[in-house]
Image (tube, rainbow, N blue to C red; front, side, top):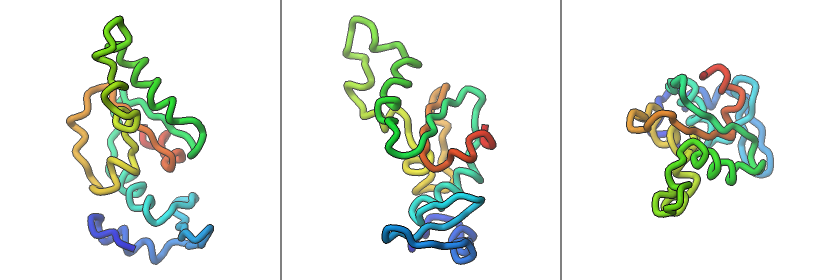
Length: 139
């Protein structure tokens, strides 16, 4: 299991967590929830380093619950530019919904345990499948 971009404390913690194998995947129990080895370091990093703003918007859901259309509709509702008569400004014509609403654990915290999110304009839009138990703690 490779976690070279994350602090060694994360890698050390893997050996101390309860582990189960399910459907050929190793799952680790951390703070009462089960995570795959590929998502756990990012979840830990987001929990440790993410600083929410009062204006942040989160789409939190379990996997396969219809979030793709929500990733498209939420930014469209929040940014009415492009919904006018001129479709040239519609962000959905130029970008995939995953780009409009990045994932905390898959895009933002997976490669870097403390990413610089200052480039994001307010309100910042985020989505997550695995941080559901922590959203109320983060906000």
